[in-house]
Length: 276
Image (cartoon, rainbow, N blue to C red; front, side):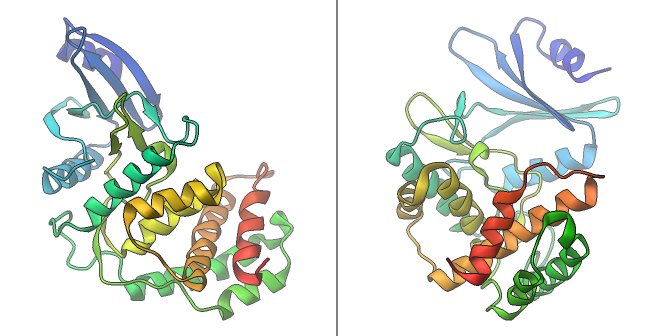
């Protein structure tokens, strides 16, 4: 059974539209003209379990989808949740009010003490330091493919490493497309299968970095205002170095031959470690 057949069998009298196709399939289900929900079908059952645990732990947190139902059909797991909206920050023009709302949503998550995982610690400061250094070291193997000067890697190991404070519930991948928006401007953060305990700076700096690329520094500032916290510039820059290096390494390790245009990542890594 494929994902579409599963959804049509579960909701035979509803209209369904596929929203995303990848490892997981996502469908919007309309059972009436005004009531919609989201059904996510997972190729790997363990991913549904991880997302379900996160949603259960974060139940009641404003800006997190509410789980409605779940199940397993054959080798496919599925989860039905509330519909956060038809738009996302990556597809919308800059709107300071919406960006502030997105910042509040992320802060709501970080402010809870929910038992989001069965891990005792998750991602802590020791992990961040070790992963940062190993990422920079491994990236050195692909330096020529990126056209990267060795000075950038050397300096990346010399700067103050990313600050990681006490672990809280984190999303780990709060990129602009994960913040969905409804017609009223309310923001919901989706895709929780990689959630864990980790430093809030991990989420905050990734979101701010990518929003700044999309909407400029004033757009990122609106998000930070909604979140209600700031990082010193030096601390922010080291996290940008971390995020850009991780993305470059991921791309290099999974792609053969040409990497495509990843110069923006190299530019951000270079600026983060060498300054403008």
